[in-house]
Amino acid sequence: MFKAIELLPKGNQPLVLLTRHSIREPADSNGFASYQLPLTSLGRDLAFEWGQWLSANTDLQIASCLSSPIPRCVDTASEMLKGAQAAIEIPLNPQQQSETSLLNINQHNLLVEPGSFVVDIAQAGPRFKQYGALKFINCFLSNQLPGMKIPVQGAQDILRLLFDHLPKQDNHLLLAVSHDTILAALFAVMAGQTTIERKDWPDMMEGAFLWFDGDSFESSRVNWIWRGQHYQFKVQNI
Image (cartoon, rainbow, N blue to C red; front, side, top):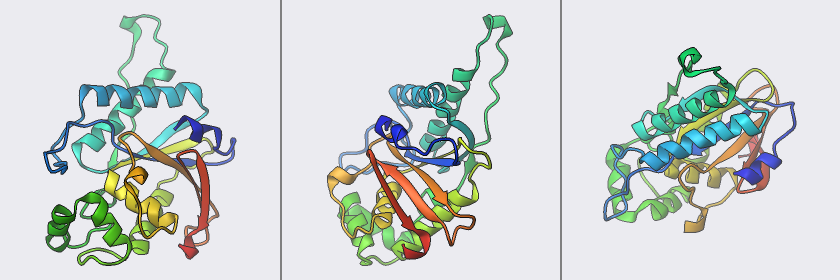
């Protein structure tokens, strides 16, 4: 993520940080992570420190926030916002420290499943449990799964959501917190990939920076930084 900071445009663009939630409690023995699994204390600390670092060491200011409604995503967003706020507050003494004023976290179903790519959970859910996450995403990318959106449509829906919530000022940042399967699928579609490998999977608290060149979503060019590499494509060509 530090490498990505060096590749961001300088002072002329509102940005998006689309990230996976922070470190959660372990999944079950089959590797399936219930939506009830919370962040660990380390996960909360990591989200706070990352938000604080971004605010203290870059020109970026988190100006709006989207999140999956799942608690570990909302909590990740909340801790990052607290960290960002802490970086700019310099109280003279504890008695003079005011209550932290945080942005509203807009919870959105396009950042969770069903919603992002899944249309019918009754059809898609059993196959997810049967295949596991990686095989499931690869079958989805090659249009082999019932109950799912066409991959391009799902990607465009998420990107339009981000575009519609972009901050209005340069150097302002939209924070969007989601899940590994959604980020893995979205990044693959954006890159034109029909298969991914385990090494491509987003880690907890890992994400991509995005920005849009163009006045309308349909005519825009999407730029994104993922693992230290700059990619771009036209929305209409996705």
